[in-house]
Length: 206
Image (cartoon, rainbow, N blue to C red; front, top):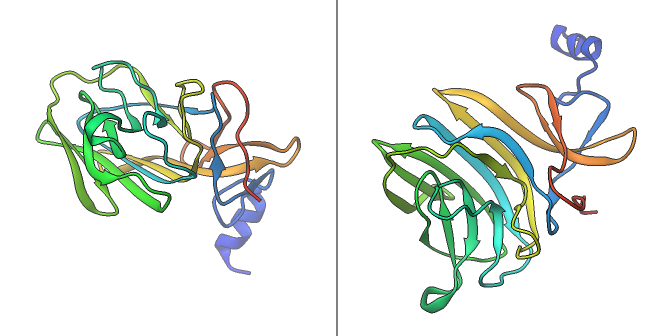
């Protein structure tokens, strides 16, 4: 038995970084009203990474985050109108459509602010950039779903990472608390278990 394995056993932590009282799962599936409040605000040096998959594509529905007008908090949405069907998002600035159509494939979304301009990438391809970000939102980023009521698309969330000043500050892992089968996401950095901050409950796909 090596030293690290012994240390994990002593601390009650599994190899994946979760305490043994939690069971890691592949993803959480959102439902109307379900989301996790990350407690992290958008700043100039924050990098936000989200791995997700839509279960359907419906125009005019929210996927992740929260819409607060032009306040620039993160959200992901499927657009309507003449440009219907495109992924639309906001990140520290007013919303705008990306260059990618919504689909039911698994994707990695990465958002960051470079020289006062927000950029977002889908699977390492630059798909969106904003106007200059002059004022950062005070609301924190909602993940794993949306607080926009019933106007949502069910979405699987596989992982979320947040990096600030080149330091990992959040690493959310989908899991279930074994004692009561409560689904949520465990942050391996702060060692905190986050559960649904809204209504209803997450689904753990079989």
